[in-house]
Image (cartoon, rainbow, N blue to C red; front, side, top):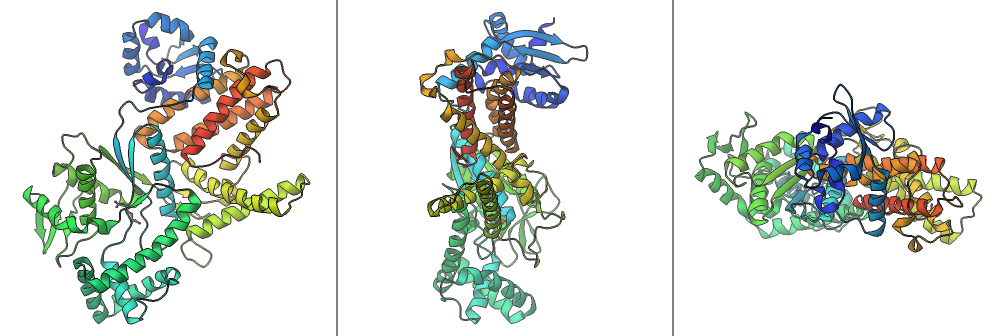
Length: 574
Ligand code: ARG
C-alpha cells in the first residue's frame, strides 16, 4: 500500500479535542463521507473517495505515525478507482466514547475571533415576516454555536428604522392627528404605512412635506424625533413578543439610525480615497461586482440604505474591532451586500485581508403552491399567527396522544400541555427552517414540520425522551457507571459511536461555510442511529445493560447539546 492510502482519515486527528481544529483534512473527508455513505459500506468503516493532502501531511508529520495507525485503524482497503475504506479499531472507538462519557465535551475553535453577526433586522412600522423569521433563526443558531466555540460574538439587530419612509409616515400621522395617540398604534402602523405610501405616490403636496420631514428627522428636530421614537417603541414591542417565543437572547438593537452621525464622514473618507464619482448630483461608488454603483449620498443630500450599510461595515471592523462580520440576509440583497463588501475592501477598511465579511444568504419561504407565502386573504403571513398555528396543531396532537393513552388531563396538566405544545410548535418551525439548505427556497408546511416520523423536531424530541426514559427506568444509575463498562459489539452500536465522533468535524465545517443544515443532519443522524440501535439492541435487562447505558448517556448529552444551539429544550418525558 502506498502511504497515500493513509492520507484521508482526518478522523484520526479528532482523537483529542485540542488537535481537532488543526485537522485540515476534515472538511474534504466529511464531504466525501457524505457522498459515500449511501454506498452501503459496513457500519464502522470510513469510506473516502479521494486522497486529501492536508490530512496526509498532518499524518506524515505525526511523530508516532505508525503507532497511531495501528492503534486507530484496523485495516485500510484501497480500491482501484481510488476508493479507500478505513475501518477504525473498536478499541479506539471505545476509548473515544469513554472520553465523551467521562468528560464534558468542550470544543474550542483554534483561532477564536471577535465576530459580529447581523441578523433578524426587521423594519419599523412594518410587520415582521417569514424572511425575518429565517434571518432570526439562522443568525441565532450560528451565534450560539460560535459562542460555544469560544468566539467573542456580537449579535446585532440592524433594524430598518431610518429613511424616507418615516417622512411619509410622520406626515400621514400628523394629518390624521395620530402623532401622539395611544399605544394601540402597533396594529395601526401597518395600515398607516400603506395609506401613507398611497398619499405619497398620489399627492404632490404630501410628498413635499414628507421630504421635509425626513430632513427634519435626520437633522434631529424635536417633534420628529419624538414621534419617530414612539413609532419605534411600538414596533419594538411587537418584535420582542416574537423574540420571546423563539427564545432569542442577547440580540442588541443597533438600527440604521445609529449610523446617522457617521454618514458625512464615511462619504468624506470614500472621497479622500478617490472612490466617489458624481452622477446626476448623486455621489456614487463603483465597485468590482456590478455596473450599478452604490449611492452613498442622494442628489437631494439624503442618505439611504447603501450609505448606512457602508457606515455600518466600517464601524463594525474599525470601532467594534470585528475580525469577521456575518450578514444574515435574504438572497435578494446579495448584490447590495457584495457591493458594500467591495467598497469596504477598496477603501482599505478590511486591512490586508485580515478581516472577513460573509454574506450568509437565504432563499424564500413559499406557500404550499410554491408561490409567495400569504394568508387566504392575500396578506403577508404574520409571524405571530404562524407560530400560533404551529402551537395549536401540536396541541391537538398532544391531546390525541393523551386520549389514545387514556390519560386524563386535569387543570394542572392542561396548563403543562399548552406549554409543551408551544415549545414543540416553535421547535418544529425552527428545525424545519434550519433543516433546509439555506440557499434554497422552501415550501412552508405544517404537516411536514410536525410529522412525528419525518426529519422533524418532533421526531428528535421523541427520540430524546425515549432515551431519557430508558436511562430513568434502568436498574443502574448512570452516575454509578464508568467508561470501562463500555464495550461496542453490535454494528448499530458502532454506527452510533461513529456518528457521535463526527460532531467536531460538523462544527468545524459549519464554522467555515455557515450551513446550519449540517447541524440538523447531524441531529437527525443521531436520532435515527439511536432508533436503529434501539430496535436492534436490548438495553434494560440485557447482559450489556451497563455498556449500553453508557452509550445512551453520551447520545443523550450530545443531542441536548446540539438542540441547545437551536435553543430547543428537550423533554425528559413526552
Ligand atoms: N431591514 C432589512 C430588511 O428587512 C434587512 C437588513 C439586513 N442588514 C443589513 N445590514 N443590511 O430587508
